[in-house]
Length: 444
Image (tube, rainbow, N blue to C red; front, side, top):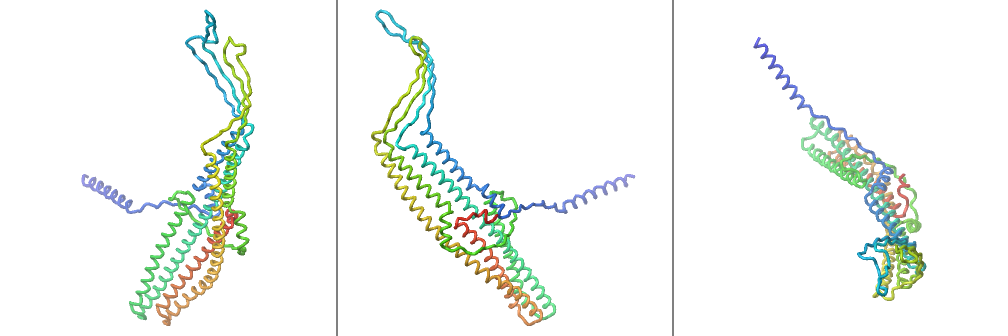
């Protein structure tokens, strides 16, 4: 009986150990990572909504709006009020002969309301207000400029990501072609048709192709990380991109493209508004030391039972001016004039840069179209070329060099085709950007 119990315990222990070993050997299931699909139009929406650069510029625009409120305040009435309670040690009194006469309450209460309004200042405050308004318009144009810049950056990075995916496809196809060729070569070697050394070039080429595939995968990861950063998404989030067809309309005339850029580019509007703001500030500085005519009115109450009237209302008309300020006003005027000249030159430089940008991007589109047309013909021919030489090689009328060269040409043709395709898409986006076109509308 004791032997049976011992045997049962031993069997239970062995069963437990076996179950534990099996549990350790079974690998845990990998967590399923869901990928988020980002389309071009959806990505543009997210960038315009969440971009940190846009939010920074919007904060500057909001601050400039508050500056307009500050500039408007001198044109509006200023209302102030005050209340005091005085505690004296003695009751105010004056000597009147041999006696003293009280002059007021010992602990009087006083309060009043005062209204100040500028009536005329030769346009100084209104010029400052208009200048701040033009500066607000300039900041709005700058926000639009930053929005367009981050949109273009997203679009080009999006196409970069798509291109890296196509390069992975090209590398995979090269690996598949070389693998199939190596199988043919091994079969011929086993049949005694070729020698073992004839397998070495195929194996070297296959190893090289696999390394290219690994590098292509890494480039895609980097491109996706860059895209995720632009979208202000966590770098741990997996995203997918969706390709679009390249619908390139007829290229605009260069002069028409320049005119479109001059009308629609917000950067030009930014400098125009800056110049207007500078001119208005100069006008305000010019009348800085001229008289300011004002009105001041109010109501006051002073607790004093010995006075005939304890309260009173009043109105004051007056003028004030600075006779000499040490030359500060003259220096401010000259500073605005120098700023005006600087802004004008910056605008002229911007116009030159925009014209160059339009011409360069237009030539880029034209060049990419020509490259793509050439690459299409070479791509179709290269695929047929690989099939042709593999058949000849299997029949013993072509060398391994011929087949490897055909596969290499096919890979190069595919690379050139996809590079030209996405170069065309990027160049077209840059052309539309340089012309001032609405990018979200184009890629809606």
